[in-house]
Length: 335
Image (cartoon, rainbow, N blue to C red; front, side, top):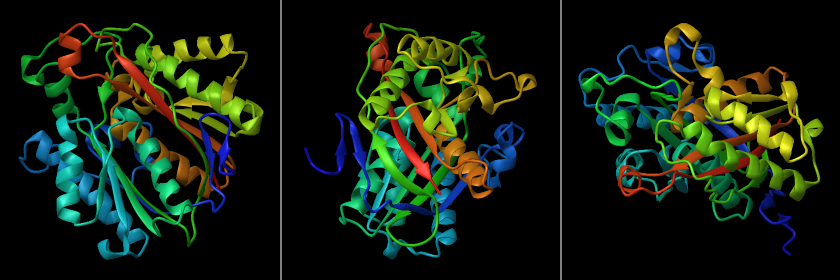
């Protein structure tokens, strides 16, 4: 077994790549949310001055990338790889952003887990000395996601209590081998898990087993337990998935207690009518690159295990009666 692997699914970054610059941007609903104070830039119009939702999402993603580059005091020519993904067909938001950036592009699709998958891959590239710097970014948009995965919002269909609200926003991070910033010390890449869930209106329940599987494997691979972390963060399970996750974790022999926070369940305030909570690629991205990094810089956290979850389905697979398979990836972030 290579020295950089730990157990079956975890890799150790000997060089501890750092997040040397990051940026978050979101819409007005997110600005009013619990995480609003941690978002760097808010836009008053989620359609970005009359653009379509899809084109507005591209603009959000590109702006997040530019802001992250500015914070790291770098230009596009200084970045060796752009790693990006989103929810739309053929990850068009990321590919059009890559066109405008002009940086060599690795497109990924982990659904809402894309930010952690990207950070893990970016850290692999830097730690393996295949790149000095990588730009990792992802985005989502409420209107665009509803139109693609469920129904256009113009139909004004009644949401179910298990529905989650896709976060409108984007986030980007520069991962480099030199400079200042939080370190990415480990990554546990998850397996695709099928718990037999079929409803696209209950994605939290579909993703909770994947989050549990990755958490359990991370603990086994690294010989750690909840006591070794100040915070264990899950991506966008929402209130429904969070309850199932807590139950499954207990069945696995662990109790997380107050150390667990789910970004989806924590995102919106009750009066914002977001159903079971937030979701979308931007949900975990805003939580990790916004809330986590800012609180870590203030000294609140020293060691965080961030697990982002993704429902790997499409309208095509759902219409053909397939289950909603899910995946979860994890990274450890330290000062």
